[in-house]
Length: 382
Image 1 (cartoon, one colour):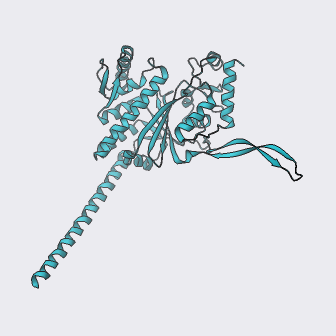
Image 2 (cartoon, one colour; image 1 turned 135 degrees about the horizontal axis):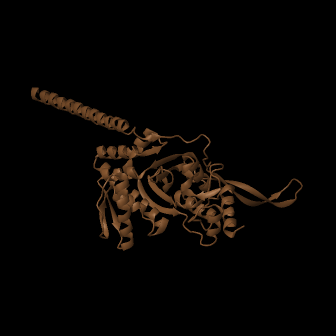
Image 3 (spheres, helix red, strand yellow; image 1 turned 45 degrees about the vertical axis):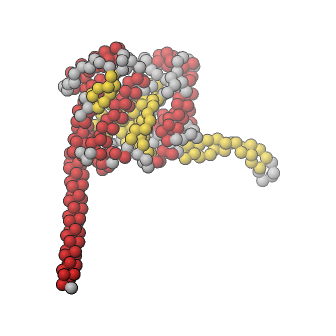
């Protein structure tokens, strides 16, 4: 009897010790988690903030279409009446961020990417806007009504965000502007990424030409690579890769940029899965030190701590189909040589919404349709 009682006492003591150990472990884990968040909050406060103007344009997400309906009035007379039907946009389920990369002077945007995050699934889709694409500028921001997409930023970031919202029917409220030094240092902190040099002598020659210039401009260094194939590329390698434009023109460069961003995200996710949040925080701190954004620190921390949830599923460019005739008329009218134009601007916007938000029934606003019609008249010389 005494032995049974002693055994019960021992089992009870073991259970108490286990509970104490579990509580202590939980407290340690909580403290570590809070410590990581607090440390992250401390080191990530190096970025520059610039809020958007209160009057910058955001698409409401409500479009309309015209349907004809047969109506019978009180007198029994029947007639056909055009009726405006509202269409609710799917954009509410997405977080849309404008990512811009500025040139050495910080004046024009060589990188223009619309990043759309599905809030439920974490899937990311990206659309590169070719920097020389003809766009309708914000009223009063430029001496001419139309010009290249990369030039609007020189007026203000608010004008740039507003221009993309109005031209594309979007609801972008957040932006990130980064320079090439920031990209290079982030890649170095990640330990490089895997990129492929094609078996193309012109591509490799241009890559190494840009690499020399980027090494000099950033004060960073990466050795030249002359062999085709997959290589581990470091900071200035990646910047040079993202600047190649004479092979594949602007659309080739935009594709390289999307590829590099995708590879950087994949590499960052590997660190997160291994629990190496210290490296991720250093990468974020390095990047944010060269960033201007209106994103709040809690949002940045949330994205960083949940990085394994996100994956780039598809990417494309805007416009997909380029105009081939009458572009010279537009270049002369708006004094923008080498401009690129959508073959049909409104149709390209519809395809963007179908790609980003699965909006197969999206109807461009009357403002977007007026832009498309004006571009068609300009190409015709009217």
